[in-house]
Image (cartoon, rainbow, N blue to C red; front, side, top):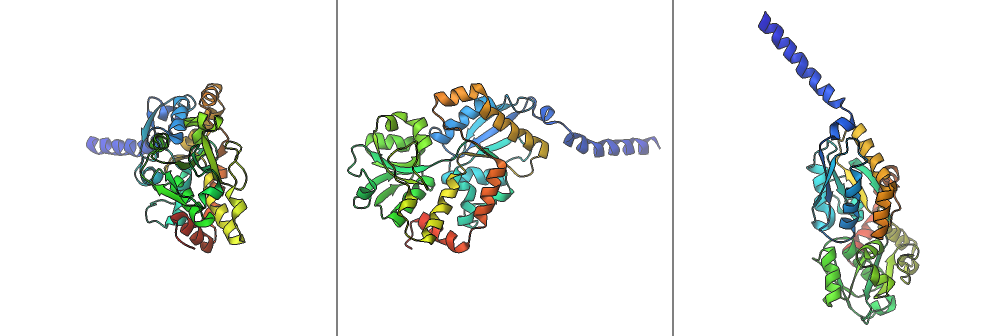
Length: 341
């Protein structure tokens, strides 16, 4: 009889353990833990710089004050990291990712070939700022304007199958530029290749340029060629917006679809399955960090652009993108791949 009573008590305690664990507050859960922040790029460059500054401050605002540990997971233009977040990473709130803007809506184009996730099912935390992607050349390049780029070849260094190569492909196909895209560089290697004369230029966000090489813009060491935007980029004066050169309504819709992924900017994401209270804590603490005077002071010193979007704005943009007509998606995909129309 005593053995039976002991077994019943043990069973009851085991059954109660799970609810009690789930009732644990975010502060109790995170206290003494590490939160892994995985960056979808290599060391150096804009995404890495931004995320490392965020990591130095974020833990102060997460309940329980966990330690933020930064890891880099480059590969496939950021898809390696996001596939990991979606399919491998723990969904307990101890892993978050710093994603490339284009990877957020890449499943719309890719149809599951390399993207093993649905962006609508991931837990978006927020974005630090939107981005404008411009193509530019060294000051001494014979290609100094868009008109030059339409008649002369320029070697463009690119960070693999990423937004930099995508942008150059779009301009080649839609605007008739003659960019010769050389892939396989990291962001920091791209800038070194330009400095060494291996490449004449690249396509990158102006925010990344300001963080990595502010003198290139301030001292006019580069020629702004064209920006993937509906309006001029105040951070890179002189680059005409691509939308000004499209000729049909369909082309305008295609360019707007491509530009929409840039609005995602520098997004942060957690796996699906994170308990609601921990996810809420991550989201609130992220925005508390971006408003913190210590963070702002460091970000200003690094010349970072802070213009955040919350998860609701991101979810709405993602939903709109997933709803775009397949005919427009197909045309945009052909442009991204550099295929003829």
